[in-house]
Structure formats: structure tokens, C-alpha cells
Image 1 (cartoon, rainbow, N blue to C red):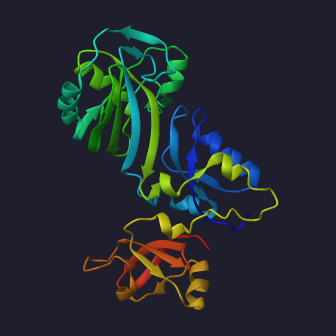
Image 2 (tube, rainbow, N blue to C red):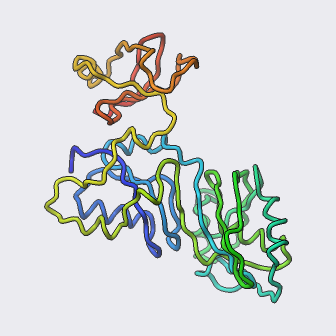
Length: 301
């Protein structure tokens, strides 16, 4: 699979790290370059965008700012990890009512401050928080600004409540469970967590990791690999047709392009904006436009 490039809309199972998921694919299909966008907790299941081949250079450009999660908060006790994997820290026999929950969730909409969990990947003096936690060291994590577009109660029971949230990059569902429970005068933790959507990567069009691994080794290509341009939303793109242009780009040379044929350009100023050049659905170069001259920064040929 040396020349394959594109995206895999992977559905990661529970009890598996994002790294191990892509490593299994790498070994199974002898993929030289592979990466993922938006790490998913080991205890969580759901969408994990996978980049194959030269598409790994495009990971910073996929729209992963908004994500949709389905999750369950268990009321009555808080754990060391803010999920069901940790040890119990505090207990309470207070269980919030549906009306009180609906009142409080309104406070978590928009831009809010949030303190990440102790077992997060946030760095403390250059060391990941979860490593310090495992070493049983004492440390504090600073709060940071996060964004919530929507938060709704899906179903409520006495001991647990089902939620659906659309949130921005860097948001921790486990922290939300911890903070919301405290606002309701009790304790809480996450028991189930599923990521339903990451940008244009959705659950409906995803493929299960087990199903992907069942594809026989002799297959030269994975038939679920999507073109590199397909998962880049609202970008300024231009389809290359001239073979001489492809040749010039392969040597890092600038080429002239017709500004009127740039997708999504509308009436905005294109000068110095990031432009993606594609060939039959695959990104071949990323660069900027100066006048009608495209100057490549990255070559994916």
C-alpha cells in the first residue's frame, strides 16, 4: 500500500487506545504512513478519523473543531478518573431531578472555562498529566476556554442520565460530568461515551475496526479509503487538469491558475489564503495564491 492515500472513517471499539487502533491497521496492511485526527479515550467508542499515506500531511486541515458525543452520567459518586475506570473518591445519596438537570445544562453552553481531568493528555511542565497521575504525584491543572454549541438531555433515570453534546476541540466530557454533578449538589462520573461525529466523519458512513481487519491480507487496497479532498470541509480548492502543471508542482515550482475555477471562493479575497490543489479527488499540493500565481508550500505527489 505504498501509493495509497486518503481517509478511513474508522469506528473505534471500547478498551482500545487510538494509537493501538491505527497500529493494528498499519501492521495488517503494511501501511508506511498512517495517523489520526482527534484522539479518542481508550474507554470510549466511536469515530476516529484515520489518514493514510500522504494524507497524513492534511490532518491539521480537517475540520475537527466540532464533534458530537453521546454519553451517560452516573450520579452518586465521583472517581479518580471521572469515569467508571477509576477508584471512588466521594459518594452521595442525592440524585438530581430532570428539571434541575435541564436548568443547569444551560450554564454549559457557549464559551466556558473547564479544568481537564487528571488522566488527560494535558502537559504539566512537559509531562503528560496521566503519567503524573499514574506516578501518584500531586499536581494542579489550569482551566482553559472550551466551546459547547449544544447540550441536551436524551433520557433520564434516577441513577443515570443520557446526554448528547456538540462541542469544540479540547473539550472533556469527563470534566463536564464532574462539574455538572457538583453544580447539582452531588457527585457524578461518565459510564458510557460514544463519539458520533468529527467534522465530516460520521457514524453512518464509518467502518468498524474488526470489519476492516477481516479484509484479507492479499487485498492490495482497502476499498473504504476516501479521497483526500472528501473530508476537507469549506476549503478553497482547485482541480488540476494540465499535466505540465503536475510536473512543475512535483519540482516545487509555482504555477498559474484560473481564480474563477476555485471552489468556495465566492467573492472573498484569495490573496495569501491557503489553497488546495487536487487531481481526481486527491490533494496534490497546499499553498498560497499571489495574484494568479499558486506558490506551493507542501507537495503530496
